[in-house]
Image (cartoon, rainbow, N blue to C red):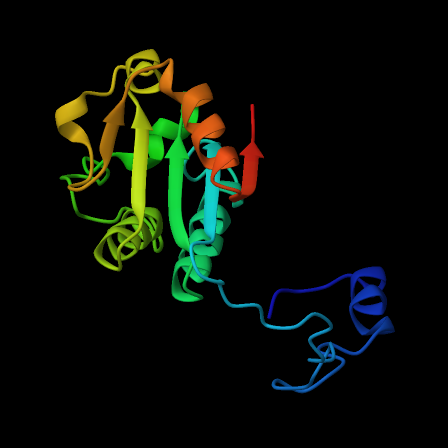
Length: 170
């Protein structure tokens, strides 16, 4: 251990670390709302306008859409603006598919799972173009869309009575 000053040592020992042994419960596990499942024909639609790896918003939105899919909802995700970058299969360093850090491919892997389990993923071509990404760089199964489709997709799913989860990040 590094040589500590008297004040550093005092600060370090004021509160015991860790104050709880590993495995201690910090929070209760009571689920307040029922674990709803889809009723016949129900839809769950997610809009994502968040940059991959810049926050957890995009990743959590994918996880929520996957959970809805597994509950029996017809589930679709629409990536637009900078959110389109989440759909790139060309992520990796030093080559595509290699993770430069743990979790670099969480989004890719989660989208592949979502598609494989029957979810639809849409990606705005204009969002790709804003960042120099190419349509051929999309994860297999991602459906490219016209910029005007963002609004019409929202209308389409709203008219279907979808539960709409819209995430937005600058």
